[in-house]
Image 1 (cartoon, rainbow, N blue to C red):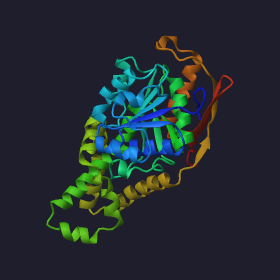
Image 2 (image 1 turned 90 degrees about the horizontal axis):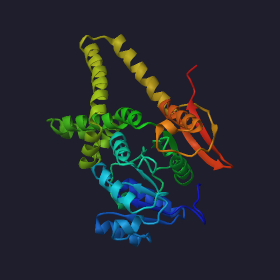
Image 3 (image 1 turned 90 degrees about the vertical axis):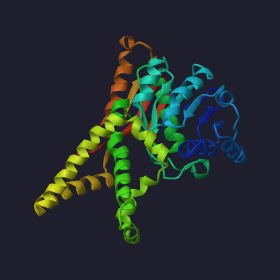
Length: 349
């Protein structure tokens, strides 16, 4: 783990619902000095009852911290980022856990915070909500997106090491727009499909009969429909353009299924499902090869035109790794060198 002078980094978590609470509890479990803050007084009292510092004022929770996780609703992140930046020092690393990245990354750039703020998104969750539902092991093995920039590559290194060492997650470095396009298909469109299926049943005269027969396919297909509605709507609206683009792709495939069904075309249906089965099996049994790299530790700079070549090469490696479906399981900085332990999917034979 990247350490502060004299010990482990001091952390704060702002917003302690399911994800934020899980981040908070894991940091506390691993013995880090961590403070929480939540706008809800009852939640702050719950945190104190667990033996965790929960100041009443946000400024008191983040002051003198080395890393701050912003875990509130997507709509709250811009204002919270400015407040936290105001009350923390220039060396404090700030990240978020929001499910869309383009908007907050653009906001940070517009306010000169790219060198301090690293957009992030741990790909984990549940339909539950609140600190009482938080689980310190929720993020074990999860894909955790971090969005590096040339200006903030040193902050990325700090966070990558922390995410791997403390949370046991897989760091996926991605550009914000690449994340939003991929997340639309991986997470956001499935929320729409789950809501559509559950809504169709809710409106049907067969509602109770369907619920009586519901087994794995219906339960799995509608699981995320139980996510708190305001959280889902916030996520969908914040990635609206990407979701609509990717939804058009999905509805195009559904139209092909429907056409084959109307025509009684068994061969076409079999072909579609064989391809779908192959994708599902690839999800369950991905093989990866190591693609670790070393880079000299350069000094991050604010102006892209002044980027050292070493930083350019490091950034290109990181972004290409995430775009190709890879991830990091290690990041170490020592003796002027950063060493990444990376993995890429093996090409099918």
